[in-house]
Length: 111
Length: 113
Image (cartoon, rainbow over all chains, first blue to last red; front, side, top):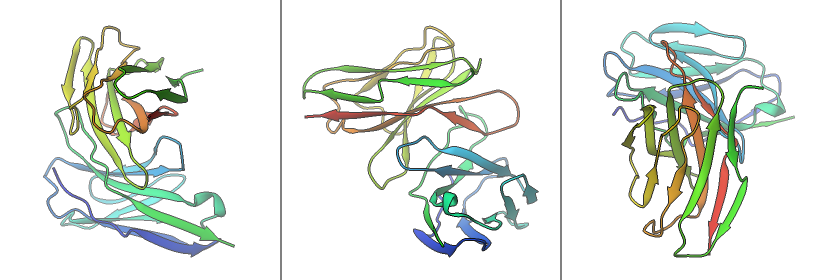
């Protein structure tokens, strides 16, 4: 399984753009990259998934370079409510589509 | 109202007792998963099931058991063989199609003393 590495924590201020980068050097050809958000004492919530280049939805963008060994989650204009743990995961195609969670990045947004 | 129900939210047990955590879904999803989360850590996969009457061990299955007799239900039993059962337990489902989105329940916090 592809192991992911991401910063332990990040700090930001309201209104700023936040970019969280994740490395996944051993990603396999058919694997997808997914990101989840988790608030304390809640289950994680899916944010976005991608395979290559750029994916955008109503809450975030995901940038994936051609070699796919890393990815960057971009959160535009964060607010206090974006304070949470963000997990980068590689979704293994087949075999139950298991997800392997790392320790994530604790994002703290201040006024 | 579609979703995943986990009950109870908090559960207390004495050491040496087996305990069963409930997970029910009405999303009509085939795949279901059980995760364990310890403080400050990520989620670890215990068991998963891709279809009724079938399930596979995850990364930390020792001391746990599951059943999948109905599509809607995937109960997890924490046995007395689990050395450190106190944790936050999360159930999740995944639908079919090309998405890797998993839907998580609210979780059960189990405390064993």
